[in-house]
Length: 503
Image 1 (cartoon, rainbow, N blue to C red):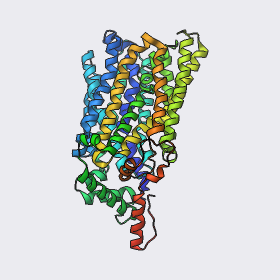
Image 2: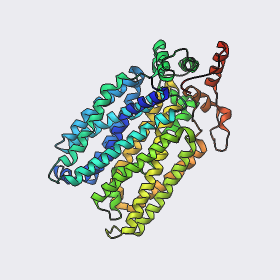
Image 3: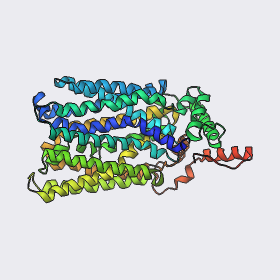
Image 4: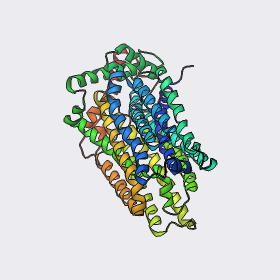
């Protein structure tokens, strides 16, 4: 029995999201690595600057990777770009695992980051180009869910090696780093068994294969399905328009008003995610919890619980993102983040780092958990969903690349600054995240239109026709609804009722 088309799309999306698992695993594992006794002994107690480089070189590499992958993905296809990312990641992972001096570790971190940059940019784009509009948010939000799965695995594996192995055993940090190579090899080895993006195929003149993939994805292979025919015609016409009116270059994103508007939103979104404070907590959980007197082993345990909470929240986002949309969950999520940081900041300011402050300890832990739930249910997944769906096919890879580069640029900044800021200014560092979460919510309330269930080929009309300031506006007036009309027209021409197995 053939799988329902939307389930098939979902399962393809799950497998591709192994690339996101690698990113999440690294986010979760590095806090234990830099805190372990054997690591400090082998690398002669790295300074705060050295530790910051261990964290930030990974994200600097990801910045480079997310730039390089745009050209690879456009020229050779989305699947080959994923393979390239896994190969680079494995080289970097091997260097980290076997590092005998800090220079090897820095090099491995940079290369692994470059591979992750390839993957976290191309995977949600690939998912968005495969998915039906009704489930596109569900499938692209798998990026954050699998990131959460990776962080969960890293949290418990690293906690186990931290408390289970002595400080004299380098397996305390080498084992967690080495295990991340396994899913990278699986992803790279098997991705060619899955379909190429139909939009990439049609864009490169392989129209028959593009139609076959659309039918495979949406109608059990039936190329005469009304919705498949309508989508195929819409993709061809939109690509013809883009070929005639848009340059397939980075320049187009800056000179075309509609494209530039989308680029600003995507860049602002990705920058805003890092300024919520999520990376500071993930990378430096031991230092963050230590501000109020919680021990390193307990810090890793509570952060591992935090990863479970994040996974539950990300699962809720997957379930409801195509019901509640993108705009209001993003606004409400940032406001909730702001509130939790305010309370956590007050607790750190009022109570010194004393192991006997049990009440404040639990207050701080609960606020951190609540923050993570809010972030993971809203901001985290939506930061991948929205950039992957708002650009035209001709500029999508480059637009998502710039947005992802923005994310990693700010991630690198947070990674480098946090190691210095926490011991020097303490709770005052939280002021940055309190202010940024509030201004994030204000920005998206003012400028982000709702994109739920709008076909990719209709995003151009939405961002061309809708006003810049969208708060209080009826955005349904600016939607083209072209795909629905095409289906109805084809059905009328054929004299049949509209029905579609994927809808």
